[in-house]
Amino acid sequence: MTSMRRRLLVLVAAVLLLAGLGTGVVLHAAARADRANRPQSGDPAVRAGKLTLDQKGRLTFLNTAAGPHRNAVASVPSTGPDAGRVASSLKCVRFYAAAGTGICLQSNPGVLRQSNRALLLDAGLRTRRTFPLAGTPSRARVSPSGRFAAWTVFVSGESYSSAFFSTRTSILDTRTMRLTPSLETFSVVRDGKPYRASDINFWGVTFASDDDTFYATLNTAGRTYLVRGSISRRTVTTLVENVECPSLSPDGTRVAFKKRVLSRTDLWHEYVLDLHTLRETALAERHSVDDQAAWLDDRTVAYALPADGKVGSSDLWSVPADGSGTPRLLIAGASSPAPL
Image 1 (tube, rainbow, N blue to C red):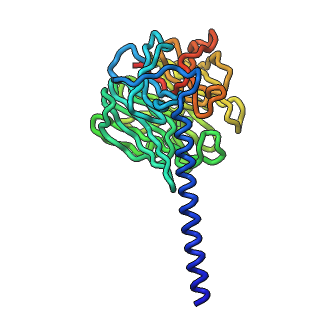
Image 2 (cartoon, rainbow, N blue to C red; image 1 turned 60 degrees about the horizontal axis):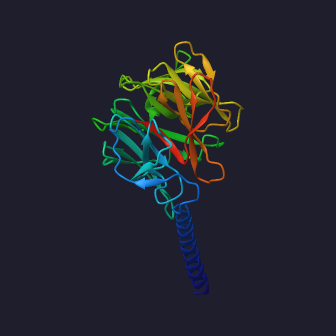
Image 3 (cartoon, helix red, strand yellow; image 1 turned 30 degrees about the horizontal axis):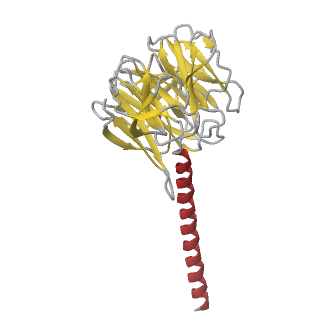
């Protein structure tokens, strides 16, 4: 009987301890959320308003400035990105849009685990379909026609610089709603030969305008490759090494990407690759860029960098795609740019 009482006491103590830890996690998350919802001096002006994805001449993004509109999908005029921003009620951790179709990746913390999902959006930011995600959201893209959407999540680890990480990249046909849960089911051709390995990871899809061709990063055996893929043939072919998070230019001739400049580090510089000559051009940005850049037009690339002195916030910068000029601040307190 004494042994049984001890076991019961241990069990009750364990339950109380877990309950206390769970409450502590919830309270801590609530406190952080409360701080993030307080506007800070010097932050950009944000107002609530109607936002649609068929507004030509607008630049959409996620507002990362502290306040009630933090992480909301917002927009500014493309010709006046320093103007007051309009924020919707939709909040995401990653976002992209094209041709009136949007993809919003959300992550909600929980006591035991976070809940992650992808929302397929129509032009009015209404949810057409919801898809559960297998891990933490990382990248999102929509094809120029709006026909396809892609997203990447971390299923272990928290970043591409982690010693042990695994990703899962999915492609959705927004017309038929056919989902390819993982690009790892595609056939791989490396150096002209069929290639198979258990450590293959993909991330950072970017689509061509033909509604079939895409580019992405393939990681295997400690190396990263730019791959060109075909959705209809379910194949990918390696092109060049040391390319991560590619972004195809509007004219389809170049890819902006982040290149690891020191092995086994999380230091990347932004480059542009000519897909015909495979010639690389280093861009003028000298900070480490851990982002999938976006093309504002055929001459300009935009990307996010951490905001100085503001934890969890970022700023959007832009730079000429030909390696000339100097970086300029595009939008303070912003990430995930998508020109409409």
